[in-house]
Length: 67
Figure 1 (cartoon, rainbow, N blue to C red):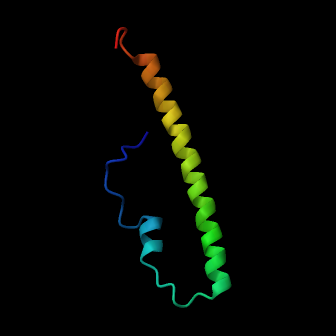
Figure 2 (figure 1 turned 60 degrees about the vertical axis):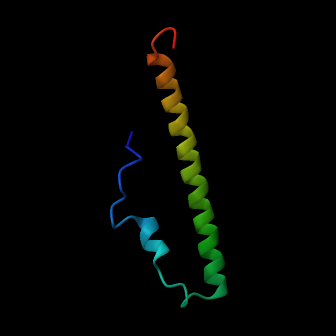
């Protein structure tokens, strides 16, 4: 698993998207972009839930007795 406390690379896709000028996009293009980003958020949340479950299982397996 990756260490989530590390700084993200400057080329991180989310950082690039956050800095993009939205002025050239039409309303339809903006709606499509929102749908795509919502789908990506759902994918990331699902991955986070799986990673959390994996970590919890590992913690339970390797926990010292009595703690």
